[in-house]
Image 1 (tube, rainbow over the protein chains, first blue to last red):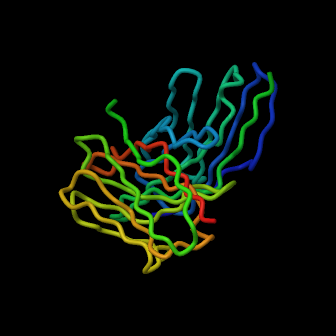
Image 2 (cartoon, rainbow over the protein chains, first blue to last red):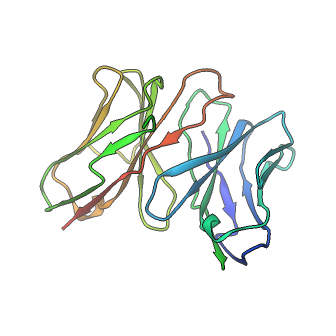
Length: 112
Length: 116
């Protein structure tokens, strides 16, 4: 298993703006998952993108994956105050371990 | 409610005491994971089970920590002789088995442990 590294560490935007968060990883993956965590709560799964996919949408979320650059991005369009949370990526490596390894995340603040 | 359930949600204990947390996964999920999270950090992997078998343990898991999943359903995480450094949020997650392409994990709300 491997850890993703999210960038930036913190992001502050105005409500209505778009937010982009990036994730980099080191070795080949089977898939990459994005999770959200509201303060003091558990993680919520957002999107899983497979290694043979390049882009995936879910509502206001758009995830891209570039396996040649070993990177992924999460775009939240038309952000809302309720999107304020920490966002984590979890790349699933090619090894046989099923655990997910999380980085420190991106803390997003959406100002009303 | 068919989500992952953790109990208790909060626990305050004195240093040196033992504590036990419980996790009830989503019923059809045969994989169960424990994570620990401190303020400002991402969740750190502790251990995971497939059915009742504990398949992997992190080196973070000292001898004071033990986890069980006796019948392949709920799991318990026990910390013996707690230390102040054990103060953290303990998260449980579960997932279906299957191919590596379908392993999204569902998390509980966590148990926040404070050791005083």
